[in-house]
Length: 306
Image (cartoon, rainbow, N blue to C red; front, side, top):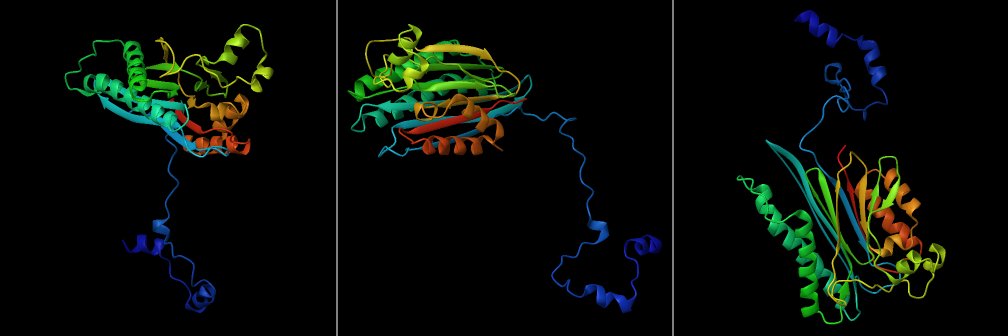
């Protein structure tokens, strides 16, 4: 024991001890025995559970609006218990319209009504110890939830309307439901960006018919006119699709206050170079405001597990 301690704390010559201490009164004392060896990097060796989603969210009223008519909902959870090990997330962006506060009321109703409908249908069966399955498909639940929100807005907010873009991630699948011109993008691990939704706008329809170009659409006087929105017009069927969850990459859900002023390649570049999804969302909002911020800005970024 004596020889072991002697190696850790060797005797010092008293004549030099005082000199070596001069000017070092404020330096921390670290005994050799307490100096830790850098831990081995186990990230490439150990896969951690439960599988989790990493999420960021940000909003801004923009630079030219007096109040915010967007609404955002996000719920992210995970469960690990045999025989399942699954992430569960519900993410919604709604962009209200109508003026005189009708837009913000409509968007809030839409986000609350859809999230309430979906969670009521799914949370019980998913997290019940009996593992009961819902009596509807996920697509039916998402579609009926949007139509329920549409009926409530027609009744409660006359003259108000809203877009609605939602992503439900459950296990190894994601389901998107969409009405209006908010957007859902996928961004692959190598930065390739793709729009998963179709804008329900007059200008997008004109582009599809070949009557205007993408460049002309940017300044078209009717670029903000929608032919499909919650609370507006005749009954409709929302666009609902299901995809397998790919390994890695991102899902970006946003209002046109972001995608309408920030080019797609810049969206991807910001996401791929940010430290975290929250950092990315903050930078995306800043980019939209730096580009003039003509509208409210809402964004949710979901990082998919690898």
